[in-house]
Amino acid sequence: MSTLTASILTDRINALAESQTIAMSKKARELANAGNDVVNLTLGEPDFATPMHIKEAGAKAIMDNFSYYTPVAGIPELRKGIAEKLKRDNNIDWKAENIIVSTGAKQALANALSVLVNPGDEVIIYSPYWVSYAELVKLNEGVVIELVGKLENDFKPSIQDLKNAITDRTKVIMFSSPCNPTGTVFSKAELLEIAKVVEQNANIYVIADEIYEYINYGEPHFSMGSVDAIKDRVVTVNGFSKGYAMTGWRVGYSASSKLIADAIDKMQSQITSGTCSIAQKAALAGINADLSSSMEMTKTFAKRRELMYGLLKEIPGLKINNPKGAFYFFPDVSAYFGKSDGTTTINNSDDLSMWLLNKSFLSTVPGSAFGYEGCIRISYAAADAKLIEGCKRLKNALASLK
Image (cartoon, rainbow, N blue to C red; front, side, top):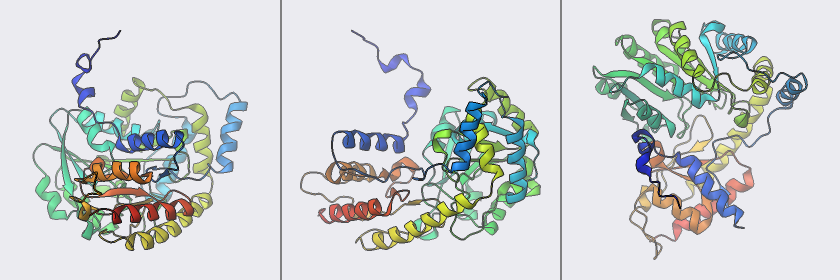
């Protein structure tokens, strides 16, 4: 019988938190597999099939025996296609040599932090933030500095908040726009203000996560990497999961100065090497085609957003804003903290999410996972019927708390 304990493992893995979005989704699946009617609103992935032209390109790559190792940084034609896309759509003027294709945008983020952050370096993260940001910083022995925005300001910290957070140990500023979990979209003017602060601090770098670029409901997308004055100090991260409905294909990329790109190439060469050859060919078909499939998905998400906004507004005690991008609501549920159904007392967002799952078979993600206690994340990347049923369960469950 094994007597192994966690003490044999490294400090870094024992200190690492499990992704709560994955953990809650796992628990929801377990309940569903046990025969329960679970409404799962945790998932951060489009519920659409990958577009046919992309699937056909992947199938053709298989039949053409394109199944051997690729260059670590990606096949040349995909890197070139990404560079052309960035120039055309984002005004980011990099060549193929500045692009590194990775196994999803998560690896691109991990790569960027690994080559920029030394032990003790501070990383300013706009909060609420995607679950993995803080843990990836900790893995690299960096220090997380949370820059917290308030719901009434669309979760956007002020530029003065940013200036106040900067110290002589600040190495990286990290944010997503559109944002997961809030759906916040930073305007061009707001990003230019941030860029001006970075320009005035020569030792600070930016990691800009743009994975939700195409899921945007009005505010034109602007890329920090297009600002000439700081271009060499911005790592733009993007991928194919959200905008192309290719979550399982695992293709992401980073665009950066040659020095940083070469360092990322070296790092990736020792961890995963090149991304799946088949998936790269599929991604190439996606980036070379028009965006009609992506835009149709965005139209559907926009309709779901309005549906959810109307339903959530009807629930007493919730504070919500109407997000400008991505496919999440991040309502403030703190009005229910301290209340009980007679058996369970809700003290925080973790309690509430777990209680909703066990009581109503409604799966959400606690705000604590995103560095922001008091809220829960609800995904509307699901069919209308599930969204309506989910909001019904949420309203009824919360009404039982006294």
